[in-house]
Length: 155
Image (cartoon, rainbow, N blue to C red; front, side, top):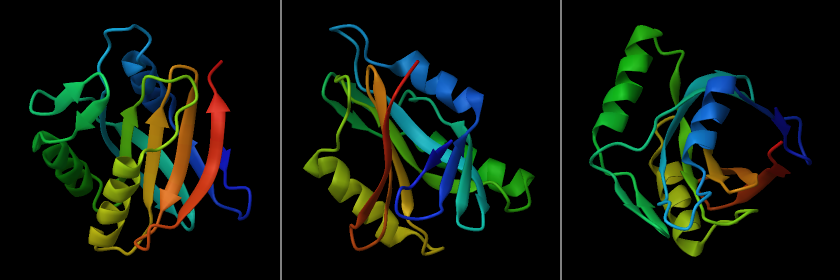
C-alpha cells in the first residue's frame, strides 16, 4: 500500500498486480518495455488496483519505448466494468523502464496528462513505472500536476 505524503490518499495493489509487474521487469539487457492498464475500485479518495493488463500482441515494445495500441486492453476494461456493475473501472496506466529507480520522461508525463484530460469521471490518472528495483507511483490530473506517492524498492 502506498500513501501520498501530503494527503491521506492510499493506493492498494493486489498481489496479482505486483506479480504482473515482476514478470515484466526489464532485468536483462535485451528485455523490452512492457505495460498495460490498471483496473480497480475507487474507495472515496483511495484506489484499490485489482488488475494490471499485460502487454498484448498489438502493443509496440522496444528496449526504451512502449505504446499501448492493442484494443483488447479496452475490451478487458469494458468487460470488467460490466461484470462488476460499474464498480471496477479504469484507474490508469503502467509500464516498465530499464532502470533501477524509474522516473518519468517528458513523453510519459505528456501521455498521462492527455489521458487525465480525456477522463469522463474527472479523476486523476494513476501512473506507475516499474523499474528493475523500484516503482514510481503517482497521480496525474488533467492540468499535468503530479502528486508523487512513492518511489519504492522491491524486496
